[in-house]
Image (cartoon, rainbow, N blue to C red; front, side, top):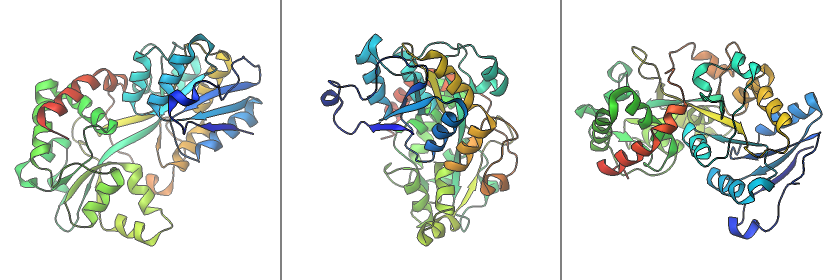
Amino acid sequence: MIHRQRLVAPLAAILAGSALASTAGADELNLYSARHYDSDEKLYQAFTEQTGIEVNLLEGDSDQLIERIQREGVASPADVMITVDAGRLWRAEQDGVFQSVESDVLNERLPEAMRHPEGKWFGFSQRVRAIVYNPENVDPSEITSYEDLTDPRWEGEICIRSSNNIYNQSLLASMIEHHGAEGAEEWAQGVVGNMARDPEGGDTDQIKAVAAGECDLAVANHYYYVRLLESEEAADREVAEKVGILFPNQDDRGTHVNVGGAGVVSTAPNRENAVRFLEFLASDEAQEIFAAGNYEFPVVEGVKMSETLESWGEFKKDDLNVSILGENNPEAVRIFDRVGWR
């Protein structure tokens, strides 16, 4: 059984009471999660079935959870915090949320690019930032890299989320690492110049805009496309069928990859259970749940994926250590501001 609570009220109003027990227990794990996927419950149930450790789950957005852990201080019941995007994991790290973990299991199971250099946090699922295109107007051979998005031929043809979006911040952070701050700023300025409209909506909205003919190109995490493709709603499937998807930069560094990840909280009262949980997330069983539940790519090679992901075959992914995406986040935000990417 999973004991679950959501942070739905303003944070200041709920801090007076703790949702989870603040004492350590040999058979429990207190998990603070900013992942909002019902399929993740299968992860927690599988962990309990395997170990006998009950999961107490508190859900909220990343900033809420970070602030809560800080305010709870040494009395915090939190053992593990899990969230999405290296930028958010980096923010938690900078605020002292995580402690270092040394685990042979994690070192052996996870690629080096998915591990924080000091073991502060680890990536357990991969999210590919893809390019979606209108096949009626775009030959995919014309756009083989993120850099191609700045080509003047695409003036007025790009739909993309705002600069406040952490996925775009991490994409630009990768550009900073590969091209330097000046080159990254030139890229961001070029994309702004080619936008079809002011940034609005989420990744799904960008895909729908391409299908509707508002723009010919969009940038979106791959699983938003797969959700539409696999939807029970005919209208969603129709959107997916009207667009194409490609993974850029196959001829050089590979496609930008981000993560869903987790770390052991610095004051974890159940540290041993917390490490066991992270090691479980690196198991084949957990990796298959990640891949099936939200169509994310597993980080462990050879794990079974959905038919759609399998159909895409092998492709080159950028092996940049994801911790760098967080380190470069502040500069990415400054660049977005300078180029007027709203």
